[in-house]
Amino acid sequence: MNRKVKLQRTDILVTMLTVLIIIITLYPVIYVISMSFSDPNHVLAKDVYLLPKGFSLKAYKMILKNKTVLRSFGNTVWYTIVGTITSVTLTAFTAYPLSRSRFFLRRQLSFLMTLTMFVSGGLIPLYILVQKLHLYNTRWSIILPYIISAYNLIITRSFFESLPEEIADAAKIDGGSEWTIMTKIFIPLSKPIISVLTLFYGVGYWNSYFAPLIFLSNDKLQPIQLYLRGILLTSEMQSAGMGMDAVLMNEQMKYAVIVVACFPIMILYPFIQKYFEKGVLIGAVK
Amino acid sequence: MTALRTWKKYIRRDWMLLLIILPGVIYFAVFCYGPMYGILMAFKDYNISKGIWGSPWVGLKHFKELVGSVYFGRLVKNTFLLSIEQLIWSFPVPIAFALLLNEIRNRKFQRFVQTAAYLPHFVSVVVVVGILKDLLSSNGGVLTQFFSLFGVTPKNYFNLPEAFRPLYVGSGVWQEFGWNSIIYVAAIAGIDQQLYESAALDGAGRWKRLIHITLPSIAPTIILLLILNMGNMLNIGYEKVILMYNAATYSTADIFSTYVYRKGLLNAQYSFASAVGLANSVINVIILLGANFLAKKTTEISIF
Image (tube, rainbow over all chains, first blue to last red; front, side):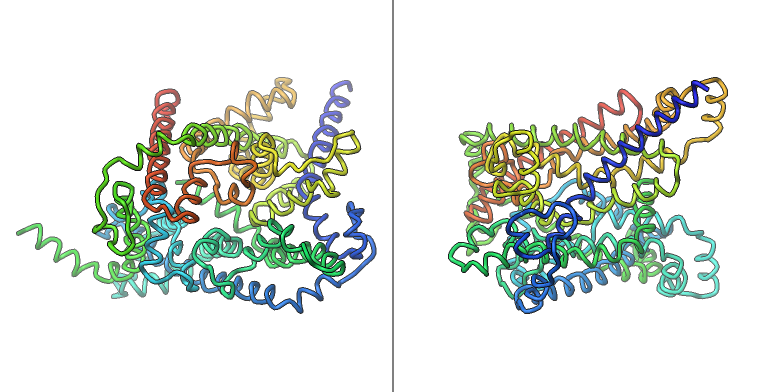
């Protein structure tokens, strides 16, 4: 009897601790969403604490009229789609030969590619290289230098290695070329790893700000993250010299832009959730 | 002669695999090994018109300048302190969280908590720093209002040197604890349930089972990740530091990589900045090898 009471007490403690953690984790997210939908006067008075006070879509309407936001958002969509497709394709193509046990350069190339996780030339030589290749201020400058991540390459190779080699051997005997084996047998069996790669690269491109910061000085090419950096972290300068209305809207618009910038990822989140756990665990095996 | 013939034979046999991997090889050669050639700049006075090879050699001039600089001590101290504080907090929290999750009995609630905890991982660092700045704003930020309930006067935390490291580390823990717990949750899920059942029969309570079964079972995972984390210790996220610091907080926030960024990209002192970057990488590799060596000696677990 005594024991049962004790166990329940532990359960209460565990639950309380967990609820506290959830509050700390989710509060900032809820706060930002509430601020973006509240009446602008409450936003300026800073008396929104959890749920929206009043209701207004003004900030979102302003975003729809703001050409810079729309252009940055469009740029981010372009970088994410083009970058993810090329990255996933190239990673799978590079991982496939590395997973074939008879490929004669397998060990040497695997070693050289893995090594890049630990040693690199550093920021300045990369910057100079991008300029030398005339990539500076082009859309490809933020995709090409990061197109394959060595970590993703390794987890993809491990995944391919886990597929039974007999299927490939059988296809080989039937006269199938390596290209046919890869595209017709391995890739169709690789949905889990392709989803993981798409997720990792996609989130990476969507959220990246540093590469655009150093490689894109042209405003027209800048992604939403750089725009956000401008309004969130250097906004004091911008609001100086604006009218009252402009200040009011500027204050609320930043919450709305955050919501818009995070929205696609949050929407996809429930669908991709099961894949990313898998991704981390495939990576952990090696 | 025979070696050449074997190579020819291999190439004839595997030409299609070579073709498939070629774009990847070009990428690594150009964008990963190409910049390594650029490290030569650190030993030269780089001049854009002369190129890396044509610029004059200056030996260790830039390294001497770095070590002799008034900032050197500060950079070393800040880089180490930030890395160590980051490790001290961000490493154990996910373990504790995974253990806590394991104690939740309602599966659905457990699932929900896990899902909620991963969410911040997908938020961009710009947004994280932006929200943090907003919550802590001295002009009515929610956290500032909350603190004032306890009589704390509003401060501009982003301009306080002593607040930089706690803010950096705290927001990092907030963002990554759930994500980093995935691997421990998986390790705990892999523990043989019979162990728990027989321990319960022997009268071991939940606390005892946690200490004597769960923790020892996931210890190898913990050690392996600790080595990896220590090896990566100095590779701290300068992208986030650049968003968080300003001239008022350089005294605690300026680290090697942000110094490289400022000197190299903002002041265009390419050679000097490359030298700073190289010094940082060399220290990184030494720490990685050291951590690995220590782990091998004490636990027989290593990554190399």
